[in-house]
Every structure is written in structure tokens, then in C-alpha cells.
Image (cartoon, rainbow, N blue to C red; front, side):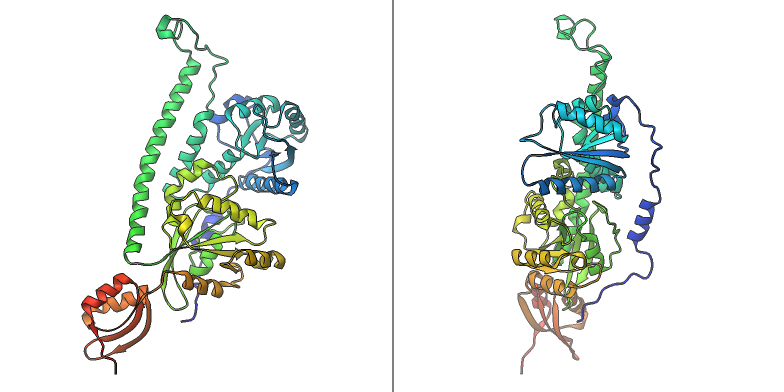
Length: 470
């Protein structure tokens, strides 16, 4: 059976989502950001004019520049305008201000001269580093983790996705809460009032304790909701497994073209945008090999270097689609300057998913139409199970489908049986779940010659009769 691709007649769902996402844009120069930076954790991140700062501790200068380039793409995806980028060479980040007090003073001058209102650091800062750096530069300071969480919050569409993102944000926010204790009364020593001094606790400390308790209560509620939603996802997955439909998971670096590949293979019509973390919610669609064998394709959330641990934990129920798959399509951006580092970053996250390291993997080098042929040749030589494709033009897709069919669980049982007409459902299952070699309709039933999996073989053995070969 020839390979066919579904072409949507009208606007796909992803087209409408992309139009909706682009319908509201920021207008530069209209910010009403507060001058008082002490309330920074309690305000929504509204990035506008930013300066990027990175600390280069290991690797080459090219690695450091690529990391800052990726931070620039993340900042632009969040809706900001990048004005400048700085890299500092250090053995390790400064424990007080991340870049040291002297460089922090230089950064303050650059921020003042450029008119920036935000500094983004290429790393996860401790609460103390955030506070002290803000006090020096006098503008809002956020780190790479907060930036990625903000992008996830913008792009989450489903109820489960929004709950997962909110849980990750609260996990990040909890240790970084700051009250107004410097302006209000403080806790003091002494034996009176249970050891907290005359008058008890000041309102600054009380406010923080209330906030922390509310955050913990909200986190507990979100965990219960995600657990309930993951039960529904697990039920659907078990239903597919009961039918023994092979599962293929699409994983890879963000913006490598996973959703484009899913659309090319199945006509799913999911949102496609040249931006980091454009789609977060997993999509499962059916597809068929060239021989007609049915399997499912699941698109998963994209990965990135130093993906925040909070996100891996919060999205664990979604990432279970990868752990329960029979085959992983690891999509790589062939046009990226350093695709090998992307492969390493994805495999680092996959190693945290239970059972994923035992699943067969196919490296799908995407964007072949925009990639350097030398890079493509290097990747195919390095990775044994690899195929070069272009989801945009369709080149290499037949070769990918053939490789998928070869790597799917084998149909170990070949049968030639007479199936009664009242059990035509078994013939239909052989078409859907197996490989039908021939059909012959007789007066007593259908002579089925097919390759099937064990469960269907057992049912056919009970319901059908053997055919005497001549």
C-alpha cells in the first residue's frame, strides 16, 4: 500500500491557535512598571527591554555564545526586546551577586545607558543573588528558570498544561518570597510571648508565613488535580495497549520541528510556529506504515539545556507518554550550529524518565532543506539509527516510515485460518493491528492469511478453523 498523507481542506486547529496567539502584541515604550523593585516576585513577568548576562565557567567561548544566543531566543519568545548581551569568564558564579560586585556596577551603568528595565541571567540564581543584584542594578532581575516558566505560562492551553505550569511556578516561587520586614517590625529575642519578644511577631514575618502556607495549600491541590488528570491519560494509554497498537513518541529539542513532523505524518493540524516551546500539550494521532500497519504518534513537550527541574517534575505525567512508547523518534534540528549538544541535552532529560533508556531510538535529523550537508553527513555517521528528513518539503518521509515499520514490535504469528462471517470483527482487527497478506471469501467464511500479534492470534485460534493447504 502506497504511503499517503492527509491534507486538511481548511484551516487546521493549529492555524487558528497561531492567529489567536499573534492577535495581541506588545507596544514598546508604554510600560508602567513600578520603580519599587521590592515587590518583584509578586508581579507578573512583563518583559520589554532586556539585557542578557551569562557566566562562562567551562567549555569554549563558542559554547558560551551559543548559550547566550539561546537565551536571546527565549527572551524574544517571551515577548521582549533584547538590547545587549554580556558574558563574564569566571571559575564559578559569584555566590553573592552572580557576576561579582565590580561587574554588577558595570552592568548597572549599561542598563542605565541603554534604558533597559530587566536583566536576565543565563542560569538559576539563588534568592540571595537575585536580591543583591537587583539592589545594585536598580531594575528587575530574573533568571533563566523564571524566563522558561513565563514562556510555558503563556503557551499552556489545556487544563492539565496550565495546572502543570502553575505547579512549577509555585515550586520556583516558594523559596524566593520576600516580605517587607525591613520596613515593618521584626522578630526579636527574649523570653516573653513564647520566646519571640514583647508583642510577638511583626506583620512582615506574618505576611510571609501566610503567603507560604497559601502556596503550599495551592501546590497540594494542583498535585491532586494533576494526579486525577494523569489517571485519565493512563486509562487511554492502557486502552491502546490492550489493543496492542504500537506507540511511537516524538521527542526532541524545542523548535526542532516535532509538531511539523507530526502534521506531515498524520495531518494532525497542531500549531506550528518558529518559536521556542510553541506547543506544550501532548497530541496523540494514528498513523499507518506503508504496509498498512496501525500505530500511534505522540508529540511531547520540547526540551532545552538546563531544563528547570520543576518543569520535569510537573510534566512527569505528560512525559510518561515517552516512557510507555515502543519507539522514540528523537527529532534534531539539522540547521542548528551545534546539533550534537541538543542531542546530549535531550538524552539527559530522557534519562530522568522511568523506562525511557530501554526504548529503541531513531534520530530524525529535520530541516534538511536548510542544513549544511557536511553537518548532515556527520550526524548520520555518528548516529547509527538515523534518517534525514524535511518536514516542510516532505523529503525523507518515506524512508522514515520504512524505518519506523522496521523498528516497531514484530508481528511474530503468521496465520492462515477460516474466519466465520459472524466474527468479521477479527478480520477488521487484523487489518488495523496486523499485516494482512491475502483474503479469500468462501461460502463458509473468510480465509485470512496475515501476520498478527500474540493477543489477536489467541482470539483467532479460538474462533477460526485451520485451512487445509493443497
